[in-house]
Length: 440
Ligand SMILES: O=C(O)C1=C[C@@H](OP(=O)(O)O)[C@@H](O)[C@H](O)C1
Ligand SMILES: C=C(OP(=O)(O)O)C(=O)O
Image 1: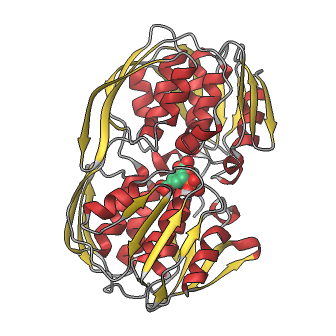
Image 2: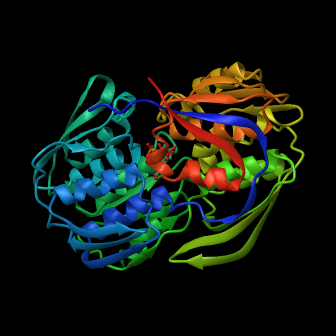
């Protein structure tokens, strides 16, 4: 059954206020499910993101025999089967809209003594998987894909993978994680060198499960043949979800917002650095460490923003936050220039093209470039934009409504539930005039 389209209608104006928590971190939630399933003994997760992407990952492990109770209010109890305990899934595994599910699962499935199929929705079937197929085949798996390395993936696992050293051609935490996860099933050492730092949740969490991982400069190494031990994982709030409210508070008048318990791992805080450089008043309070990850409360107040040239080294550290950052740039005085962000073109949508088109429809001078965007800040008009089913585009344009001169109609917002279930209610409670409309 195909669900009808869901649109957002955002009233013009409003101000973001309050003190609340956004849902759990998506990247950490995926990894908690994966490592919990592969561990010996039980893993208790709290704060799990109950978004569709994470539920797709959980469904995959259930289909391979892993038992889990929950999630209920973010609590999930997983009875791990150990690294060699899973059975072949009876049908193709559906990763839905989730690139993280598909790429990290490919790494795990590469080391299994059975074959499996990974598929997903239309958006995921347009995304490149050659980047994981190549290293996993070098390690000894066989993976067939559709043309151009697109899903579905037919994976012939090999329980005797060989460790490799792999130089990542793109700064991608998903590829790094796929290779390291395959490395758990490989003979000898597996190492990955990254061209720039990317989110390191896999490395941190492997250590939390008692698995030795070594980092030397830009290279991460582990040795196959060990075991993961079930543990407790406390998932912090997702800075990528917090980013929409951060931008909403910065651009709206009289705003004062505290977002609680947000994960502020330095491989994820590019958005704070960029918005601060633009003049955003953002303070980290109560900085602490929870379960091996840094966490803080973030205080944000209305600010006068100025356009900047975004340093390329910040791009991988803010990769999912650019749709929201583009909205901030549209509200800033002067020009914002982003370069070195070609990866944005291969996310749930082409986030460069889709954001440029949407901003232009709202009267903003935004120009897409091959690997980024040039935005001259100014007034945001009301109008109609299409999210192309991309959750982050939908939530970013919702925040633009706070300063728009008329209502904004955003098409195709159902996928917000992949990463941020409850967004409309939380946004309304925080001060956004948002209503939902079932599309045709
Ligand atoms: O490892 C992860 O959890 C993720 C890595 C990033 O993708 P890439 O590895 O493609 O950069 C990011 O965009 C995605 O939302 C989540
Ligand atoms: C790119 C994203 O996720 P994924 O790659 O897991 O689909 C995202 O959440 O912005």
